[in-house]
Amino acid sequence: MRKLLTALAALAVAATAFGIEGVSAQEKKTIALIPGLTTDGFYITMRRGAEAAARAVGAELVFQGAPEFNPVLQVPVLDAIIARKPDAILIAPTDKTQLIQPLKKAADAGIPVITVDTFIGTGQYQTGAGEADFPLAYIASDNVLGGRIAARALAKAIGEKGKVYVSNVKPGISTTDQREEGFKDEMKNFPNIEVLETQFNDNDANKAASQLQSVFARNPDLVGVFGANLFSALGAANGVQQAGQSGTIKVVAFDAPPSIVDNIKTGLVDIAIAQHPSEIGYFGVMAAFAHLNGQSIPTSIGTGFTVMDKDNIADPAVAQFIYNE
Ligand code: T6T
Image (cartoon, rainbow, N blue to C red; front, side, top):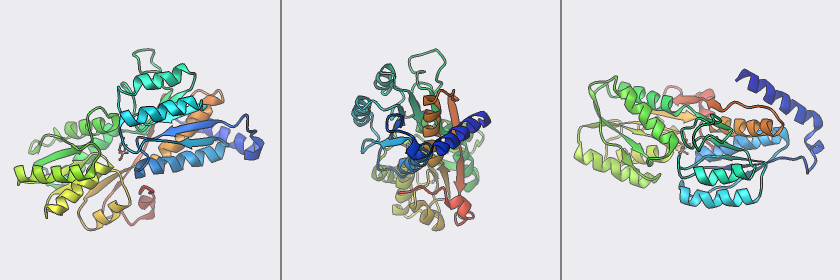
């Protein structure tokens, strides 16, 4: 990692030394960033980081995505980007398997592919094995660890006993699958906690809210919920509020949209696990740029988390990780 940072820093310095204007239109690299969806604070913040890196190295960033987190809508966007022949593609694939063949088309056309946030196949790239190892790198949070952090926080909040469940998007998304996996595995350390069946909401916060109410109706002794991404968490928290259970049913949220501040202050949400999407975007562009300049790059780059609660949410060092909108 240190080696990469040194290489990236050298490239950034070189680009600055030439002066951004010194990079001719012909040499200027175009890097496309295709998010999971465009109207999500997580990807909006990732775009900010990617733009900062593109400015630093004098590259052009093209940001184009679908309005929903859905492979059927994302593939045509990808096809349109491939037709524009960018120098590299950064993408958050919306499904581990359904994006393999569409992305293979990009690789076959000679466009380097780096996945950000989510992965295809197993996420192990450049291994020479399997049909989905062709992306050059995967840049993301450690989502299994994020799920474990959520489980420990929820266990603590409920006194290590009672019924909880995971509000999740849909199976097949690498990030949210791994969060659920880490959460359930960590919960095995708490024998008095029962993890009920996962509720899938298709990234629809309203659906997540009504699911919370149905689970509560079936289980009046429900004590906690883990919202495995921004919309799952917002919806679950709204559901808790609508059920009049704020503070009684504990909520651990993955992701940190601006509304999380109020939710933490009022006690509706106990813990929010903020990812660092800006870092993901920044390092995505830098890795693509390094590759385009003949540098080798790591096949995997991990970015951090900031765990937010009522005791630290006012601290600027923590609040800086609240997502943009
Ligand atoms: O949690 C993020 C992202 O990491 C995940 O892959 C999809 O959902 C989000 O974009 C939040 O909505």
